[in-house]
Image (cartoon, rainbow, N blue to C red; front, side):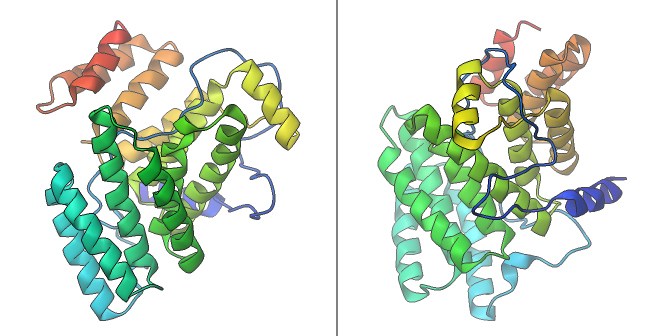
Length: 297
């Protein structure tokens, strides 16, 4: 069933022209919108990236490179999962990644892995109450370079989208909405190349979730900028989160957004069931548990 769904998803994802407003299948124009939370697309966690994709039927597009680079990337992926929770080790890795990118300046595989380390350092800084704006802004530039070097590499598009979403918090509403359009375009391109990536499915769900709750004044700005307002539903967002969960059932942040969608749709019983699973799972992030408690299920 999952393979059939992913095949259908892959055929439906058509990346829009870079110069145009991304005309997503789920968008239409409207200005009748309710007030909800701010438009935010930042992720708090990223699942293990050692598995480049989670489907059996497609070749790993990230490893279409020299044997030397492919071997190096496998080592880096294995190492990253071991060091990402330690800021000092991440900083050591950043120096190593900049060195490797200097030796291999045209490798999109190494460029997006540099971005990944910078993302983790940014998270460490944010948790410590230190501004991560400088390093994340620098990472956006590297991520854009990765896309330019590797347009057919799903991970390049994925990490560019992740950094666009993560830097929205530093922007005014106009820039947030502009980044949101770019975010959607690159997530869709990533999924077009690899529909089995749970992170990309979650990101598209996040886009749909945020668009579903866009504020009326954000809508007016979007109309001024783009001529229409991106539209989606919590039901559509939920579909993407559930597909991501089919591929990666242990990702707590994805489960949290399944719960949020169920609450928004008035499905309290289903939300409570998912909340119970998270509460009973050892090692669940306290911040996620606090968000669940705030929903008063």
